[in-house]
Image (cartoon, rainbow, N blue to C red):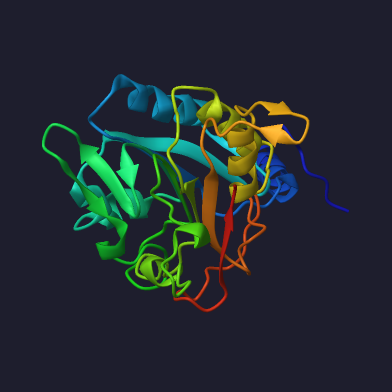
Length: 257
């Protein structure tokens, strides 16, 4: 029987190879690394703080379930980041966090020049249609994420959102006027890092600012909303469903009131 001599000139190499194989075999399997980006409306300083108070929790890789996340973009918002160059910015991320002034379907990017983006006119986000990568889009602004209560008399709340949902899993934000520069971004980040549901954690973070008295509660800081699919409803950063096919089929909305 041959024995390995660890003092042999080549024996240490064989031992090292064995140890490395054992190390990688014992490591938990992980999918590709995930990226987070933050985008700030050039308006009040509070928007800078809103985004920073979220992305500061992802400085360096954060292990969440079977994935790990890190902030890799922190920019002033520009229309091209959402539109013509979306694949290099918002749609290159796995999760994008935006703080801005807003209105139904609209995100302001620069107050002094009155510029912004209408999400109904933006290209498809996600893996399917254009080679993008965005799974989760979070917009902390007034009224951008219009939901069923904001629908016209026909009740059609879904059609305006179908243009950007082609692989995108979830969109979360506010359906009403909202107040920021509070604990929402930091609270939300920590709920996500605990592998909470993506839209569920957003609603919980918003309610963390709300005051309750018996059966009544304050309208502050606004009422949250989310656009999702039935197949992606329970997505978490650490474990989420396959990309949805896009379009209105199986699209669903949740809202606070």
